Length: 337
Ligand SMILES: NC(=O)c1ccc[n+]([C@@H]2O[C@H](COP(=O)([O-])OP(=O)(O)OC[C@H]3O[C@@H](n4cnc5c(N)ncnc54)[C@H](OP(=O)(O)O)[C@@H]3O)[C@@H](O)[C@H]2O)c1
Image 1 (spheres, rainbow, N blue to C red):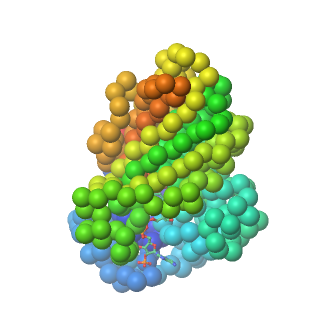
Image 2: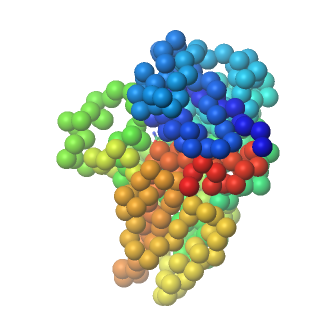
Image 3: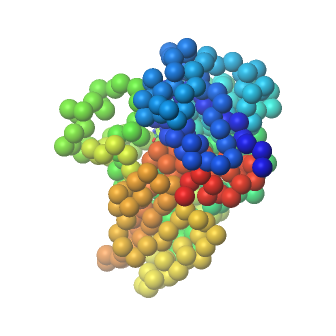
């Protein structure tokens, strides 16, 4: 089978590094192009020493026409706003793109502009791109020109909630999502909040009531399950390199929550990365993998769902490779197991 030529934009960041590492273990894909504004002309392995001897490309400046000539797919690992402009240039040249940012995830541009506080440079495409969660959208991903790779926190909420809402096993009211993330979730650029002395031996809530992943969770849950929710989402920064654990408080509609495990097992029977498990998941159980573990307990009138992922794998680059596999007709697990 043909080898897929992968180009990475924003190659100096954490998600880009993870893409480059994962592609090394992929039988049908190679990284052929890597771009950056600040490090063009340097070896990729100078910027990411862990790639030495594994991916020794020279970083280049971004030129959209070069992607059209040399790549089958572009992994756009840029921050929101900057990403949309780049995606637009690529898509207009016929390059298939997996966009890591939030620029094409939401259903409507007004919600995007309100929460992200920027004008969208390509508003007419917002709401007409595929959300890159093969567990729910594999058929649309197969032929997509632009795949909006999911947010890391939303992945831990959407996956456990959707089957239960679809089956009517929980109410749409009063859903509380309490999430903790490792520091790599904030990206590689220097920020005071992510300095060692700020994060080590500390745990702190941030963006309480106003995190940008809030509308994404509610929007995608509604899009897949047909049920409107207004969840309450609070993220926390924890002193880990990577990993997300979400604890989700819901109201079950029946007393026997063994139905919840059965519902997940049924809905995800053909989803190789989703694992309903009897134990309480930990970030360590999924670290460095594309796997998702979820479980449930009860307390009083609540069911409590716990879901763990690796933010750089299923929360970003692993999901992107899984999407690429679907787009190019490979097994979802290729290069990921
Ligand atoms: N980290 C995660 O766990 C995670 C999870 C899910 C989704 N995401 C999303 O994935 C994207 C990349 O995240 P990341 O963690 O890899 O970020 P990062 O480590 O900060 O890397 C982003 C890269 O983009 C380039 N860049 C920054 N600002 C730019 C601009 N205005 N125009 C063009 N290039 C710019 C930078 O490279 P140069 O300065 O060298 O050009 C930088 O290395 C973001 O949209 C993020 O929200 C991240």
